[in-house]
Length: 180
Length: 149
Image 1 (spheres, rainbow over the protein chains, first blue to last red):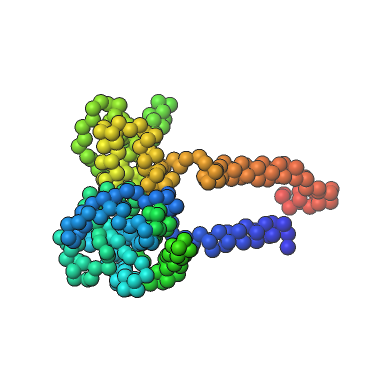
Image 2: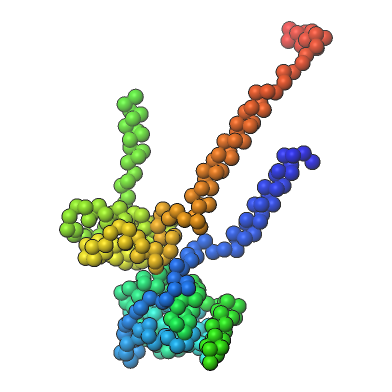
């Protein structure tokens, strides 16, 4: 048991500790600078019904803003989870149809079901850029004041919903009742 | 000697990046230079190992268009453009992250590790120098001479 051996053990332990933490992280995950800040102002046409959907419509409630597109396979994968979330009625889901073809998007929703209160047509991708979107799907939890509280990159699994999103949403919704 | 100088010069000539070509009009050469400099400093968050100059991703295309717009139409300075990107995408969008408390370790660690490595090297070298000479008594010396005959 000489000094060199002990040093080696220490180095290995440190390495294992770093790997234990690091390997669980997703290297492609870019933290959003918008967390805790007001959601960007936006306004656009809805996919269906030709109305206007702007940030105003989100205020006064906790909401999920989901960035999706028909060309995105992960969006297809999370769609059923979104439908299930919408069915619980716990939180309203709003959509940003990102860099997509509105006609294809409308067909998609008709065929698969529409979990969104409304979706804004973001063909240009400008709304996405303001939100710092770099891939689809991405989902934001927005609070009653219109601030972004959480960003989830990648598809939402039911486990993500139960373990990560639902607790935060419940916490925020409790704040409304506190104020009453 | 000249050949080596030319070789070294060529090695440093890799500012030529083969990226997608957008046909763009600028008001003056200064704007053009700013555009090309900026798009090499901004990371494409879709293909995270490439700048938006060298990436064919849709996001890169859109961001190049935004940079062009901000330079030519909105008259924003380089710092303003970088701040705009930082506000939306965070520190990772710049190839040179800002130096602030959360990035001190990122900037400083290579230097610190380099210094530690150098110290270890110097310690090892000193130890090697002060290693005692092997002592050979006359009897052993005789045996060695016999063996070497």
